[in-house]
Image (cartoon, rainbow, N blue to C red; front, top):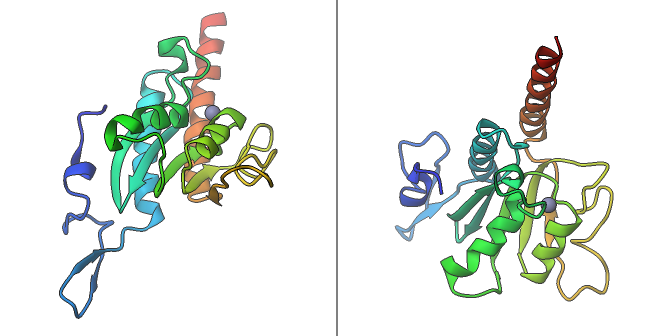
Length: 188
Ligand SMILES: [Zn+2]
């Protein structure tokens, strides 16, 4: 887990640029943190991956407006092809909520989930996935495949595609530009 837990402790911090409040008459303070807020948190997780030399994909899990878990791609670190951000996030959530059924939990991830991660979202009953960059080759939340909405599945995951796609794509492309530049330097 990252050391910066500010989103967990102060999700509705009034001094945050992202926080907004509705002036409801019942006196209750209702959080109106939008999807962008959570995607920005996922982008910070992706940056953690990039800083560690991993393909930059980051994900956060949100329940009742709170970020309850974060993860990022750790395939290289763990030498594990299944160590995708979303799968590790899903695997960590039962410890947080005490159940494998992740009802009412939304996942925000910077890149469209692959077939493995989309399948895990179906099996764990994730309510909604919001992703940034579409993946025309392997995206399994509606772009290349539609695992999240496959008819006949026991559960379908609601999908919001392409949120802050440019930012997510830019981080991805910048990472590979650096990898290629480093490879060229090594050669010369
Ligand atoms: Zn995956």
